[in-house]
Length: 205
Ligand SMILES: [Zn+2]
Image (cartoon, helix red, strand yellow):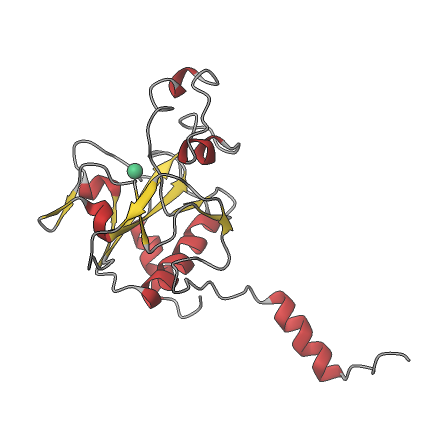
């Protein structure tokens, strides 16, 4: 028995489905459906009753200024070899993580569920509230303070921020440098906030 021939309209619908990017959704457990999942042990419970109201944008590259490779994922899973690069000796022992990483090509990786506390902000405060890890979601962009971020990274970040906002009452989206001034500079002057805001205002995503 041969399959029933598809009508022209059915075939058109199938082509449209294949072409359209799937909608990015953060589910009730705080898992993003389109993210590659790598679980970081560097996480714990948020304080009782803590609402997620802050989104923190970071920039990171390992070694600093070079892109690609798996060193960021290694750092966030406590598997960074301190001898692999001269700069790793001082950071390999750190117990850090972020909820998300957006690679240079726009690919999304998730290390910590949004319902959990990731360890990305360090000593920090926003609007007079300290310990931003308690009430924030951290998104790392693979990049450096003074190297332009990629179009695909802005596009994915805008989709991610929209998906997070549909799930949590985010009041502010800020840079790491905004919550730890004098201590942190990322995502740096290279990050174009106006570009993110334009993408956020666009209807799609
Ligand atoms: Zn940072």
